[in-house]
Image (cartoon, rainbow, N blue to C red; front, side, top):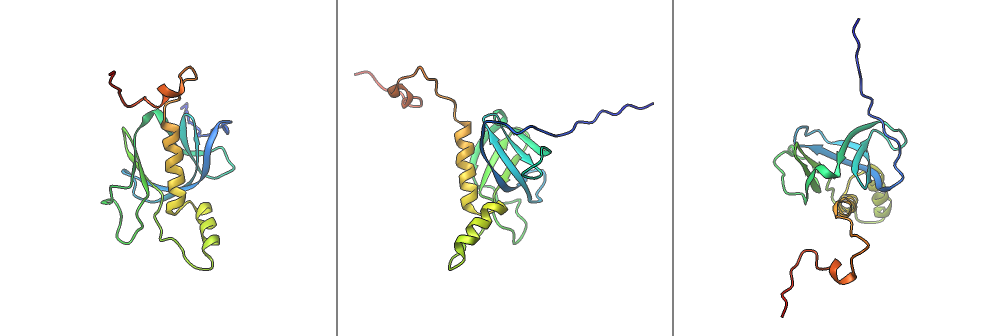
Length: 160
């Protein structure tokens, strides 16, 4: 008799969700652009198959994120495809996130903008996600610090 153990990628909805919505991405190992429902909480980014279920495609722990940068690597793009908007680097691969479409102008531009939010493409959608992830990556400021010492975290002052 053969016993097979399978792992089911499911997750309960976290109570501390910082941001959620549709977003497109591809990676340094798989250049096919995929669309998933992203949820960002204080510990990880989870890419779900849809916006209602608990099955997920991938989980990116924030502790494994080495860098978050604006788009800078374009050699993986196929001819005629749109550029990505930002990059999330981990130890094992790089996620190329968003799709930089030309901004719609004219009478239907507001409805086109809201459809971009639903579809997960466009520079505005990606910019909001990049800022939210950057915020989640910032170390928590302990409550015992005074306001003056909070701002001096990365700079040193000389005593005169």
